[in-house]
Length: 177
Image 1 (cartoon, helix red, strand yellow):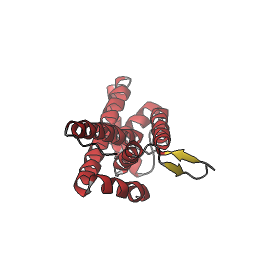
Image 2 (tube, rainbow, N blue to C red):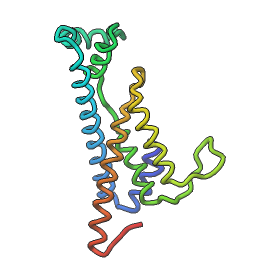
Image 3 (cartoon, one colour):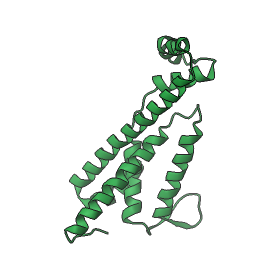
Image 4 (tube, one colour):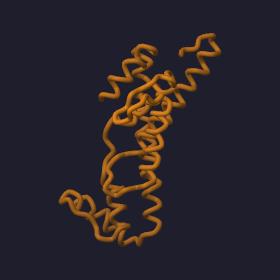
């Protein structure tokens, strides 16, 4: 939420409250859609290498095991259980879209990021965050309960929307930033 306040207020001043709210909500929805798409692909991939009995066991007993802070011993069943019975909640994908919007509208704005002793341009800050999320998403650490692809999905939807607005505004003779 600090990022929403820090970067979102600037975007709201540039775009206005209606366009900013539309951007925030659309990117949040887009982030959720991308995360669910990745979860579906992960489910299909895991299911293809398992027996029908193992899949049925995960469907029948998986949620109960997780509610007791337990999981299956078999790694494939444990991964399938986590894929099926964990939820995606939050607005972090929309927050990452706000970071992307700031980086696109103010790419050369210097930023001091702790612990770096020198300023970094906003465009490099945003690209660094995107690369970290991409790496973390593909690393697929089982103890990591972060929806990394939701963050990337918010950034993707934000990029598409900003490029659409730029193209539309150039045709009308108006271009912001």
